[in-house]
Length: 125
Length: 172
Image 1 (cartoon, rainbow over the protein chains, first blue to last red):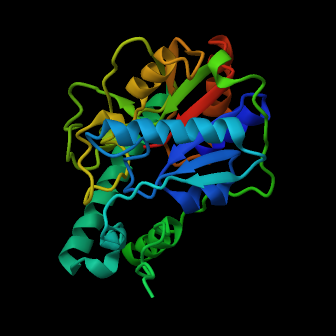
Image 2 (image 1 turned 180 degrees about the vertical axis):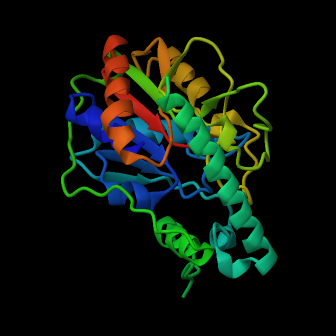
Image 3 (image 1 turned 90 degrees about the vertical axis):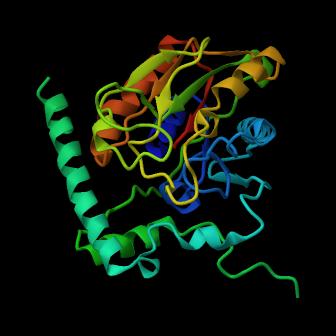
């Protein structure tokens, strides 16, 4: 998505990204970014919390309006939880059993095979 | 001293993912990285502008497996070309095809990845001039070349066709 933002911006369309993966977006380098320190999948706010979703959009719009230059990141003040231990879990092999790791490997091979066959099907069109 | 916990920082996804792939025996992924970043200022107040919405969520596809809340990663639900849907109604877009945090979120509320209802409210309230008539779906595949050479130009073309003055991009 960062690549798309850069392309639109370079062609005269101002952009703002709402997202949860701070390091990946900033490493790419984008014009404007509203970062929510939430689990991936919640870029637009907390589930079943319209107030949080409205606040997240409003922040993104303010970043769009007022960023003084490229690479502007604003972090939403909203917290996912008072306890930050959820941040230790994502793709953290130190927190998985050997069986879980083997299962992940099997899943990943399967995902890659399905994605490849779908991609090839599109390429054939 | 009242300091926050040391691990209470944005998750280092690149490091976490790098370690993860190496331990599983796969080659490391190289993330896109640029020294220069383009910047285009807004031309008028938002209340007079037309905003495009771009998402990585996928249209629900019957027959390709579970795409609902708590669904396992579903590569069969991926899409590989840009799509568009109207913004004046509700659309059924899912995120089972991407690696969201399946431990700490359930993907039950589409408003957490698609701010369409909030955008419609913002238009009604006069905060934004208008939404473009269509939202656009950006494929998430692992080929940065395809994204840069095919998908991004196609998204630009559609945004221009819709008269977009600015764009909100929401990765899921």
